[in-house]
Amino acid sequence: MLSLSGGKKDSDNSAEKEEVLFEISEYESKLEMKLTEIIEKIDGTSDIHVMITLDKTEESIYGGKTSDISATITPTIRGVAVVCKGGENAVVREKVSEAVCKALGVSAARVCVTY
Image (cartoon, rainbow, N blue to C red; front, side, top):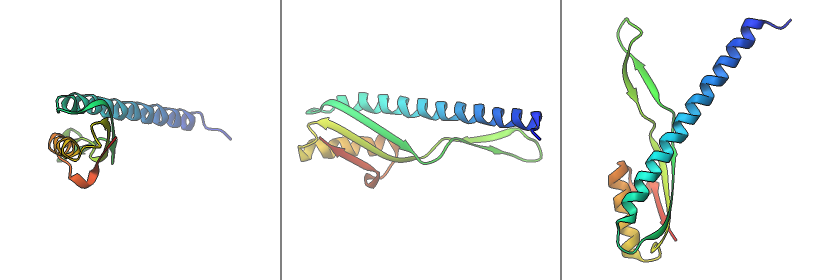
């Protein structure tokens, strides 16, 4: 027997998951655009494409005995790929990598710069 209330709950969860995925995608896109703007300012770069992958979704931390959100943790960055003209030059590649690391607070091991 099909439960109508159970179906609605699944539908609500599905819509909530889609909204979260959309928000994450939008967050990635904004980071990618900002990073592209930074990399464009580095001499020797052009035709820049940036991809950022996130490790987990946004997380809310509830505090105390209330159900109020006391903190929100943004997703962590899993990795960054930068493809650009100029990436074949070791000096340019190093400058791009350093800019990405500093801007996003990630280690060089999480950054790939290529051409």
